Image 1: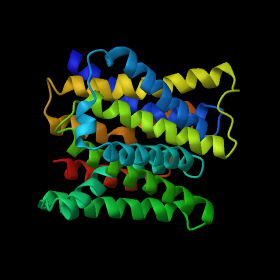
Image 2 (image 1 turned 60 degrees about the vertical axis):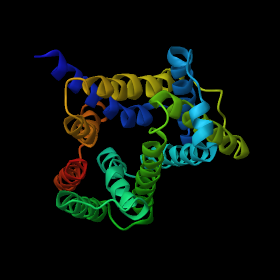
Image 3 (image 1 turned 90 degrees about the horizontal axis):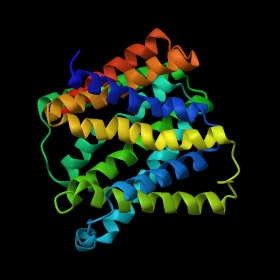
Image 4 (image 1 turned 90 degrees about the vertical axis):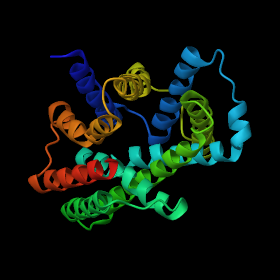
Length: 279
């Protein structure tokens, strides 16, 4: 097995592990999100702060960073919370539809025309979402989880859409570091205002907090960026779209959470739709 293929598998499994870790950690949603973002900021600062100038962010406009950080915070909070109401397969699949919303937003904001395959991808995503929503039922509990996952998807699309604009003037770290910091601060303010404990957790929870920051980020997104040297952007994007499949498989192996065949069908249709939007 080639090095590139091994790294591709590691990348998919790493990003797919986030939902499993969230299920395992004994902490409320706001604490999970705050420490994931905080440890991510600390790690990025340690490895890349030297020599980085943030003048480009000030030049582009700090308001973009603030809005992007807020959107990222909403994404994490709503997605993590959705895992308490619906299955991993449904939650991760729905939140992974953000490229569809990004494509639609780009059409209305930037006037970018959608290609036929993107229209088809949007249709398949909507079809897959409807199938999974019907299986989840119309009770308030499941419907709330579906809504949270979709909110997480829309907010993620806003984060990536702003990033697409800012990245014209800034490097990845110069954009991500202040955005993560803004998101962490926003989550901290919300948590403290609601009286959520952010400190007193068992050692196992702290280990999961760090794993949540380092695993999906280093083993996932960093590996994907490295693979761009050997694979096309379309291929790497397709690997990213496989996160729902990886998360579902890990859910079966680790948590014994086996989705019903109809959910699997809806998930595969949605993943296919996302892949078409990427191309």
